[in-house]
Amino acid sequence: MLDEFKRQWRSGSVVIRLILINVAVFLALVATYLLMLIAAGSGPLAEAMRDFYVMQWLRSTADLHLLMSRPWTVITYMFTHTGVWHLFWNMLLLYFGGRLFEDLLGGRRLLGNYLLGGLSGFALYAVLSNLMPGLNGGAAGSAILGASAGVISVFVGIAAYQPHMLVNVIIIGPVKLMYVAAIFVLLDFVGIGSGDGVAHEAHIGGALYGLLAAQQLRRGNDWSLGFVNVLDKAFGFLRGKRGPRMRVEKSFSRAARKSDTDFNAAKKNKQAKVDAILDKISRSGYDSLSKEEKDFLFKAGNG
Image (cartoon, rainbow, N blue to C red; front, side):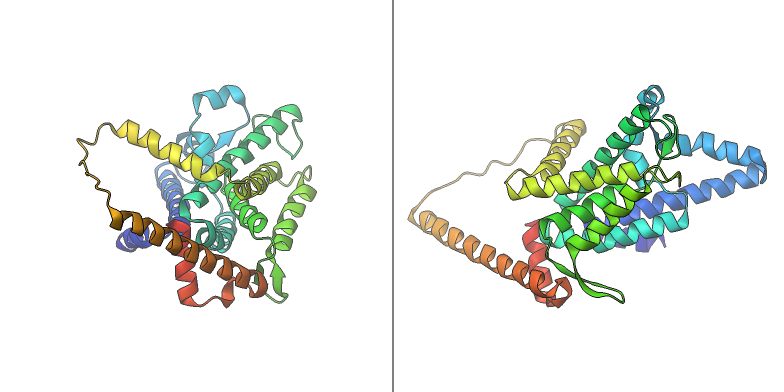
């Protein structure tokens, strides 16, 4: 099983890697819980031990004083699940929406959307929980966990970027992606204040980021990719110096000037092919693409 996990991690897309991280965290929590049961039995002590030693360090909270001592939880909460069905439905929606997102806009941008959507969802949850305690059945110190805010950010993001894309919905048939996304968001608005224990306001915060990021991307402002690039620079700085870089001398000639013209022409042709594929998706849906078209779109999005 570990070998298969490593193989999928090395060869998988960003969507697959995000799913693997969420599943791995869930399995680790289950394993820890089982060990606690063995060590302390099945009584209240086992539950208290599991909660104290594990969950409080992964889930996040709207209690600002407690949050200051565990700031990393604004990230870890969006990879943490305690229920099988909670995990299953989040990962199913992430795979469905993330596959479309990554093929069209690239894996790095997908990662940025997931993380910033999760952060935006947490921010709205924390603000509303402190301003209106009990809004969704919880107090200002209630806990939040799950990938829902990041997942809905990805789904709404691609729906806002390609609203007329057709997707096949079981029983119903082809439906425009924007209508599917609108139903998810509407259900969260209806769920606010229902006391069902679900952080609907966090879902809405994630959806809001996905919508705004898609609108800004169309205007040339790439929030998600810019965020990932900043993370790259930060982690590169934390890793320290990588040693001297190889210096490459450039020579310019008539042939080089000619290659610039060829490069621009190739770039224009590539964009024209991408636009044609996107038009086909809008008319007939993503599943109408051939394998070659999907591969081309994936490479274009990650190139």
